[in-house]
Each structure stands twice: as C-alpha cells, then as structure tokens.
Image (cartoon, rainbow, N blue to C red; front, side, top):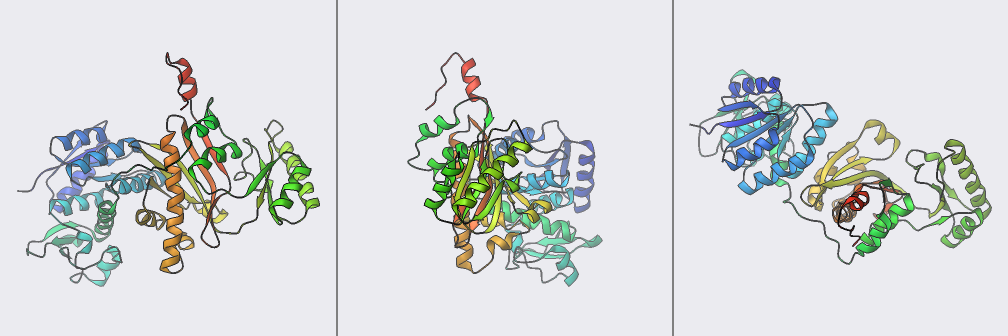
Length: 452
C-alpha cells in the first residue's frame, strides 16, 4: 500500500487535472483546493504528509523559500508545478529548482515526479534507457542529463507511457508520457543538486560608508551614487571619472588615456534606455569636448527636467558578452536575481533566467546554461569556462552580500550591463540602486533611525 500524496492546488480546474493525471499512472493522491497552498503545504510537511503543490498563479518567492526550508528540514522533496503564462511559470520553475524544489510548469511532469518519488526511485535520472525505443528516447530528451548508468530502469508501459523499476525488482510502475518523464527527471536532478542555503559574506566592508550613500527617502540612486554604494563590496567597476564640464572631461580623458568612452551621468536618463547618450572610441581632447556638449544638449532636449550630473569619462574596454542582472532581497538571507543578456538580440529574444543568490560556481553554471545564449559565456575550453563562471560568481556573491546587508533600505539593484571582458575580467558599466522607505519609517518610529 503506497503512502497517499496530498496535492494542494489554488484552483479547482487544476485539482481536476491532477486527479485525472494521478489516476492514469495509478498514484494514490488526494488533490485539494486551498487559498494558501504554499502555507498549507508547510503545515502538511510538519504533520508528516507527502505533499505537492500545483499553482495557476505566480507564487510569492518568500513563500517558496519557506516551503523549501521546511522540506529540507524533513529531508523530503516537494514537487511544484506552476501552470501560468510562460514568463511567470519559468521564473517559478527556476527559483524553485535552485531552492531544492522539484519544479516544473505542467501537471503531467508534476505527476511523473510524484510517481517516481512514490516508487522510491533514487537518482532516477541515471536510470537505464536500453529498453526504450529510439522515438521514446527522443521524446524523453535523453542526453547528458539522463545518464543511463543505473538508478533503475525505464521501460514501456501501456497507453504510450513509460515505466520505472528498480535494479532489485522486476515490478514496473507507470510514471507518465515520455516528455513528461523527461521533464520530471531533469527537475529531480536539478533539485537534488541545488546547494543548501547559505549567506553571502564579504569581509572588511565599511557599512557606514554605504549607509552614508543610501541614507534618505525612497529614490533610485544615480549611477555614480550607486557605484559608490557598491564599491566597498569589491564589485568590479571601470576606470572612470565624473566630469561636470567639457574642459574637465578633456583633462580626465588625457589622464586615463585615449580612446575613451563618454556617457551621460543622470538618475533620470539611464544609458540602458538611451544608448545614444554614450559614445565609444573618443580619441582626442577636442573630440571629448564636442561629445560632452552634444550629449548634454541631446539629454536636455529629450527631457528638459532631467537632472544632469555631467558625463562619465571611462577607459575603453571590449566586452565579449553583456549581461543585465537585477537583484532584490529574498527571505532567509538570500537574494532573488534575474540574469539576462543586455545586447539587442538578447533583449529582443527575452533571453533571461532567474536564480537565488548566493550561488556557487557549479550551481551558477547550471543557471547560465538555461540561457539560449549560454555559448557566449560557456564557450571555449574547460579552463576558460571555469574561469568565466568563477568571475561571474564572484560578482554575484558581492552583489548578494550588498543586498542582504542592506535589505532594510535597498529594494533592488540593477547592473546593466555587467560585461564579460576579453581576457575574462568583469566590469559593471552602469548600476542603479533603488532605495525604499526605511528612512521615512524610521522617522515615524518612536526609536531613532539607526544608520550603522
């Protein structure tokens, strides 16, 4: 007699789909509707129940953290399906996997995960696929993810489904259609390999200096102020100077060395929204002064009320890949990050993924591999790939530490772009730190606001 699974759903239609799918594979399950399925799932885990969650709406990430922590404490795997529009479902899947939940985006893979866990499958992604047809393997998506080195056997069952059996038993259990099983195996592998929770720590940071920059009312800091806040954490910044006059810009450019990059510095006109307010390859002092005046005139025409701080004069560097990274505080000393390509093709394609920080190099390599443009980052030989992943991981560790240390004040941080330079170094060309209302709440509190 198998242990009954409780499948918590936020909509009746999902509960009906789960009931049909579990009946088809013969899993003993009880779909139930609950307005707060993630909270109910944590309670069910405390009661010793085997639980899964199916959602039609976007799950709050903090609730996913709490559920993953509860599952880890009990040493169990919780299947999660988010059946929503594509971006929402993919975001929940990525975050869930990196927290250790067996996350998928449809009911059928969810039920395949449940069927494998109910059968007691251990490391089922290593199951032998020798008994499958070539077409089954294509539908399964058998690749390096499904290793075929043991961990049971995959076979054919009735009604076009696959079955699983252990190496010690000839009893076969139906587990679902090949495509659903393939997604289930990959979800179980990624969830199992997810790193345990940790906290990002950077030693020797002058936190008071950071507070002096971010202290104040809700606002989006300018690029210079954002970089000043991030600098104590060792986030890699370019060699650049903020200049408020054409003559100062020409002087600083000569000191840095031509050619240079000239870009507007303004909290109201971001270069990632207005790329024509930056000019690369400026190669002499006269040209620097001309570009300064042109950029300031164009910015004033575009937004007369914009605050114009001057221009950045930056040493010229060549990027082999440009990323956009956005991070915000997440429960449990962690941060939620979106990683996307910042080049025009990447933006047009919506090439992005999500993860939980901090993440070690091995976990981060799996995250980056989700991007369609991953070969731009992970190409080359093993040594180059390792160095690239390590360099990106180091930046994201420092970003996570900044977000965690100042979670009361900082709502989000955007690095756009974070450039991977030729030679493997990293560089944040523009940053934006958005500050929340902690300062105002401190004024309303009977206790004085603590800036330390």
